Amino acid sequence: MIASLAAEGQATRPAPFGHALAEIAAARPEIVGMTADLSKYTDLHVFAAAHPDRFYQMGMAEQLLMLAAAGMAHEGFVPFVTTYAVFASRRTYDFISQAIVEEGLNVKICCALPGLTTGYGPSHQATDDLAIFRAMPDLTVVDPCDALDTEQATRAIADHDGPVYMRLLRGNVPLVLDAYDYSFELGRAKLLREGRDVLVIASGFMTMRALEAAEALAVDGVDVAVLHSPTIKPLDAGTILREAGRGDRLVVVAENHSEIGGLGEAVAALLMRSGIHPAFRQIALPDAFLDAGALPTLHDRYGISARAVAARIKDWLG
Image (cartoon, rainbow, N blue to C red; front, side, top):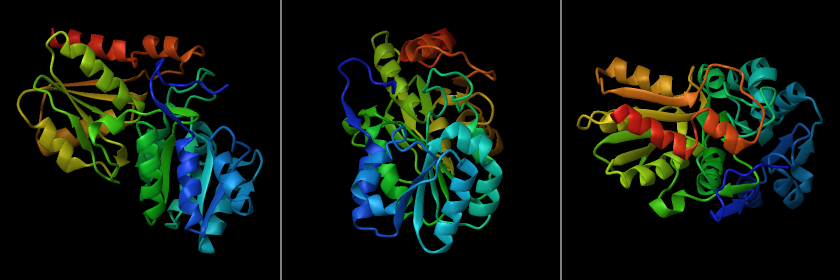
């Protein structure tokens, strides 16, 4: 069963990555889909049904998947490969680095179960994938928020010439950003909401949680700005520095990732190197192997639910 991040009654779209890729590929015969026995669980089955002659099921062999994708790219194809984020980041790192990224090949690695989006425990929770892939030279890293972001990011990375790692939300994915006149641009952060007291910089579904927390805090007179940074690498330094340097707001980075090596540390290092020193806090997963269980329970336990985000911001503001 695929757990949904959507609240009861929240708008969703089914399999936004799979539908977007199938639509793009209708006009792009060079695009192929490849997976390691996980088409149904990464929404690539939608592409497979639309373009069966361009779909390759590689079985439970993730290293072979990456090497085969490299070979396809050498022949002029644009492979979109899917697996779980833990398998890509931990099991195939060396193959991605040497066969794909060092060669500058046009392979798109799109991975489900990023961070804490499954209750199946540490074997499936990729809480360190951004730290791992941020450290790889010449690799673009993307962490979309919702269904709209995923659809638009899929189109953007298809147009981008070079290797990309993108996190995926799967199944019935919440639809949030359509209410904010939002459009995805590779390498750009977007200010979704203004606020005088706090600036939350977020990526992935934590942008959705930040927006929910901002609404709740507004009831208590706390004015929260939300800056969505879906491209983790290259980071939009100009926008982040401009927003973080405005006024004397508390700057909070919220991410669905370990506190080690992700967006929070990237933003903190950028601010320090640039001589901008706001009051700074981080909302992230702990540096630990996490528990198994139901996602709502785990999100509360580890401080990444909307309720937990709002409570921590109130506490920091005193």
